[in-house]
Image 1 (cartoon, helix red, strand yellow):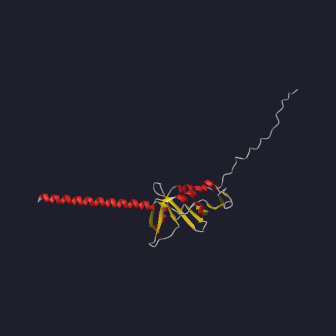
Image 2 (cartoon, rainbow, N blue to C red):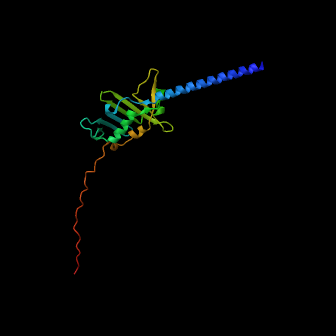
Length: 209
């Protein structure tokens, strides 16, 4: 009888362990699939689809238009000054908008947006496409270890009253926090020759009588 009871206990333990392993592997697989699904592109448009960019930060408001009359420069700074735009600065931001991904998406109530600094974002980027469609990206603060920035795209409240908060690359912070001078194309001084120095007469040595 004791042998039978021990056998039954061992069988139950084996079944319990098997069930635990199954549930663990099932949940782990689902979590991996969920992370994979969330690691997706922020936007689906291409760089050539963009007609204009507007950037608002705590220090500057910048408006940029594609230069339709020439490829050099590709972009024009329209405000707060009118000048050829820095292709490097615009391309860096554009690359993040086109190729950037969200590592994770959080669904939170609207009253929790201040916790991510999304009620008063550090930057708001508006993108206008050639087909007249517009997209918006707002950037909040970074997470505790500064691996991601909290962000929102095309802000809208879902049917359940929550909003989606994305975790995006901290490189966005470097892309938007620029002075107006950094959005302007640097002057090309390679073709300019330095002005010749004026030739001064050599002093003459005179002897006093």
